[in-house]
Amino acid sequence: IAIPSTWPFPSLIPLFHFFCLNNLIPSYPTHELSTMKVTALLIAASVASTNAFAPASQSTSSSTQLNESLFKKISNMDLFAPNADQNDYGARGKKNLKTGTLTDKSYVPFGLTKAQYEAVRSGESSKKAANYDRNVKKAGKFLDYTDFYTARGSDEGGSWMKLPNLGHRMAKTKYDWSGEKDDAPKYTGVGNIGKK
Image (cartoon, rainbow, N blue to C red; front, side, top):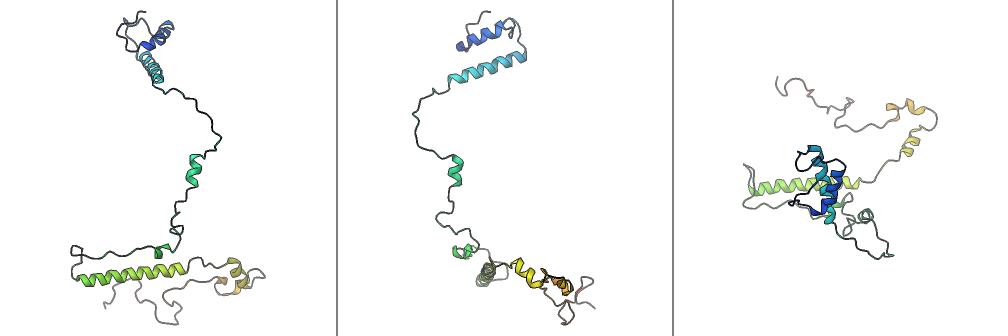
């Protein structure tokens, strides 16, 4: 089979002859090629042409230095190196966090002056800080279950079964529901409040 003079890939002539000799391309260029054969030829041509652009392999002398793997480097990074305790519970108190100051262009709700709104905002900030500090003081304090278990008497006999609430500690509620004090809410969820 004669190769046309306008053949774009002169380095692929041996590959073209291989396809022709194995009857993979019928009588090029007089016969119309089927889609599958053209696809196979284009894939082979593109693979062969990309090899021409591959960099030449350079022989490097092997070093005796041990290199860490990328995963090892990343896993050994100390992301909190400058401030090691910046992500601990309670670290918010050490950070410079504050409520922004109001300017002439700041939003002030209708009906309040700038001074009143600043007082409201500072009050909310102080409540938030006090609540956070209260919770930080409770951090790390746990009741040992073994101590609770033995104090209840669960480890010997079954006397705890006769205790009120079967030896369980009950949570505090907002109101005294026992009826000894009359501080339970009057509203039961049915009807209107305050209307007779």
